[in-house]
View (cartoon, rainbow, N blue to C red):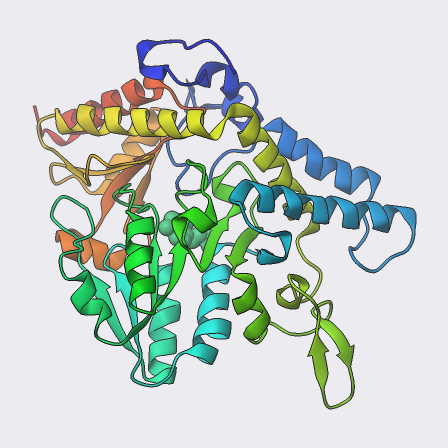
Length: 416
Ligand SMILES: Cc1ncc(COP(=O)(O)O)c(C=O)c1O
C-alpha cells in the first residue's frame, strides 16, 4: 500500500490510510481526533460511504422481488456482496447469512440450532471471557431446555485455561461457543486447537469472531467453526449488518429463526415451506445498503491487505500495552498474545473519569464493563478503561493517550 512513516508502523501507512476516513479529519476539543475505540465501532472509509450512497441515489429498490432494472441492480449488488464475503471467509455463498449484527447471529444459532439440537441434560461450554452476546442467549436456552453451562476459566495472564478442557468436554458438552479474540483482553484464543478437541468429543463449535474478522484473515474451515458470527461495523462497514456463517448441512437441517416474507418457498393458510439457503434465514427486507457497504468494506480491507492490517494491529496494541505498563500506577490486563485491544486501570481513578479527561485531549477511549461483567468479576474490578487500535491509528495516537493518562494522574494527584 505505502511507505512506512516510522519504525512503529512498519506494516502499513496509517497516515495515508487515515485520509480515506472523512470522520477522522475532525477535531475534538481543539485537538485532532485520536480515535482509540474501534473495538466498539470502527470508522468507515469513503469507498464504503460511496457504495451506500450509490445504492441510495441510483438504484434504490427492494431485492429479490422486482423484474425492473433498478430492482435487478439492487439484487445483483446485494448478492455480489455475499459472494465477496464468502470468498473472503473461505465458504460457499449459501453459507453466508446476512443478519443485523453479531448479537443477532448468536441469538439465531442459540434459538434456531440450539433449541432444535440440544436435549435436557446436554451441556454447553462457554468461557469466562465472553461478551454478553455470547452468554445471555445460552443462559436463556439453558433455562428453557434444561441444559448445563460449563465455563473455560481465564488465567491471571488473560488466557483461556485449557488444562481441564477434555475433562469438561467429557461431561456431556454438545456445543461450545467461544470468542476468537477477547473484546476486553485482546487475547487471540487458539480456536482451531479447541475446535479440534471439541469435535473429537462430539461437540459443535460456534465462534464469536466480532473482534477477529476486522483484524485478521479468517478462514472458517481452517478455524474449524461450525458457526461463526461477526458485525460489519467493527470492520469499516456500516451498522445494522452482520454475518452468520453456518455449515451448509446444519443450516439445511435446522429450522428457521425469524419467519415471514422472503424466507418462504410456498405459503398456505395453515402451513409454509422454506426458501433455499441462505434466504431461509433472511426474513423480511434486509439491510440492502448495509450489505452493499459491507461488501465495499471487504474490498477496502483486501486492498490494504489483511496480513498488513493484522501485523499493524498486533504491533500497535502490544506497544501500547508495554507503554502503559511502564507507567507507575497503571495496571494492564491481558496477555502478550493480544490483537487490537488494551484494557487498563490507572491508580484508583474511575475509568469513566479517565475517559472524560482523555476526551478533553481529543482522545476517544471506552470505559465500563465492556459487556463482559463476568470477566470484570474475574479480575475483581467494576470497570476498565479500554483503548483499541485499527489500521488508521499510529504511534502519535498512543503518545496522545499516554499524555492524557499522565494529565489524569496530575489532576487526581496520583501516580507520579
Ligand atoms: C466479542 C464481541 N462479541 C459480540 C459483540 C456484539 O457485537 P454487536 O453489538 O455488533 O452485535 C461485540 C461487540 O462489542 C464483541 O466485541
